[in-house]
Length: 307
Image (cartoon, rainbow, N blue to C red; front, side, top):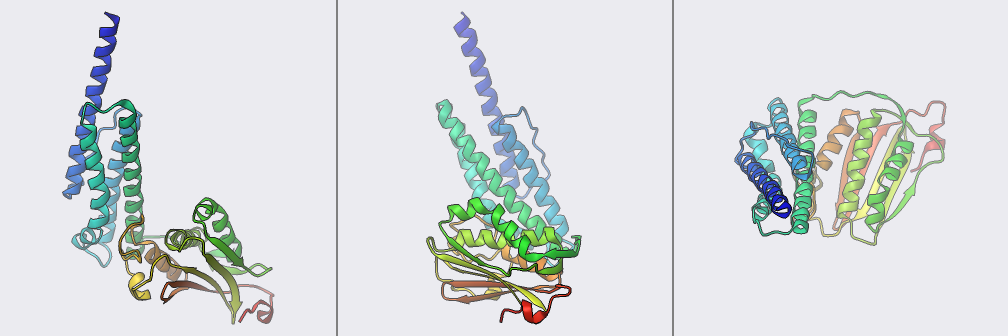
C-alpha cells in the first residue's frame, strides 16, 4: 500500500510538470507569433520556474526594446524583421525540446538534460534581448554618461583580466603592449568597460585558433589610441562599414552565438564619448582602432608619443 501511495504521488507530480511544460510551450509559441503581452505564472523554484521567469524577462525586454526603438530611427516592424532570425532560432529549439519533454517515457536523467538545454537556450535569448534593448537606448539617446578623468590603459588591463577565462578557452596568444605611464582621458569608465568587453569577446569568438592577438596602447599628437589586431577564422568578404551596421555579423553562417550588435554598440558608445572607432579589414586580418583625446596633465607629448 505505501508503494502505491508513493507511486501515485510521483505520478501526480510528473503530471503537474507535464502540464506546466505545456503551459510554457503555449506561451512561447505566442511570443514567436509576436504576442508579447502574456506573463507566465512562475511556480516553484526549480529549472522550469527559471525558464518561465526567463520567458517573462524576454517578453518584458522585447517590449521595452520596441518601445524605446520607436523613439529612434527604426520602427517596430523594422526591428522585428531585423532580429527575427536570431529570435526564431533559439525559440524553435526551445519549442522542439519542450515537445520532447511531453513524452512521458523519458527517464529522469534525460528530462534533466533537456531542461538544462532549455535553460541555456533561454539564457541566449536573454542576452540577445539585452543587446537589442541597449542598442535601442543608445539610438534614442536614452542613456546617461558620467564623464571623469580615467586611466584608459588601466581600464583596458582590468577588462582583459576579467575576461581571462574566455581568453584562456580561446587558445589565442594575447600580446599586449602599453606605456609605462598613466594614460588619462575624459570618458565614462563603465561604458568604456562595456566597449572593451564587446571587442575582446568578439576576438575570442571569431579569431583563428592558435594565432596571436595584438593589443597596443599608444599616444600621438594629443590623442590616445587603442589598437586590437587578430586573424579571423574565415575570410571577411564584407566592408568595415557593413560590419559596423546593426545585426550584421562577420560570421555569415551564424555558427557562433551573438546578435550582431556588439560592434555597433561599441562604436556608438565610443562616439558618445567624443572618440572614434575605425575598422580595417585585409583578407582575414581584422583591426579595430579606438581614438580619444589625451588628458595627461604635465606630461610632455613628445614623451608620450609612439609614432
